[in-house]
Image (cartoon, rainbow, N blue to C red):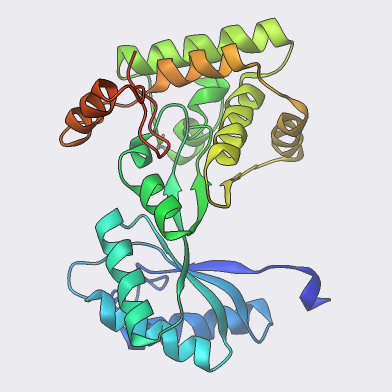
Length: 274
């Protein structure tokens, strides 16, 4: 039954290479959604994500187009994927003051080797009450450890890899994940996914990882992470190894919080660099 499933899809960048894409404009948006509904054999999309910003379409035009689709019952909820925090915050405000459908959530990359969302995106989502979908929890397969042994995946089959061991920090994170996996008699993928699941639960807003299994074995590996609970000490070690450099103005703000006796954390999710 249709009501037993949630259908979410993304819009953007153009799917037909023979036609020029008009980015996130309303005509392109309408055409893309109509095509998705036709291909999926359904009358509505539960969630429509705008895949990313383009260089020319203002966010109010995107919101007008999305609002029309929601009013027509073709889309129920809207979200933004891979948008910077300031654009999402502006979209959320515009939707609120103009009576358009609210922004329901964001998608962003997040894993032990990519924690840039800790700087702005996750604190924003918590402050605005937006849901968060975290993609690539294994860093494009890097955190499985398979590429240390010429494993198959994005690097070998697609000619691309989301992350590689390009820094001492990344190597230290992967070393820690592999070591903990051995101590726990689990796979590195389960350790990395369990960390993201735990991180999701620590956020003050609904959050979940998006998994992308390419085989039943991959899916079973992901699902096994649901039965793995990392100890506080293990979580702390992974947090410290993977902590991102925050940069200005966050480092200064963190120092101010330290001086007040409130510790080295923001009210949000940022974990301090050791």
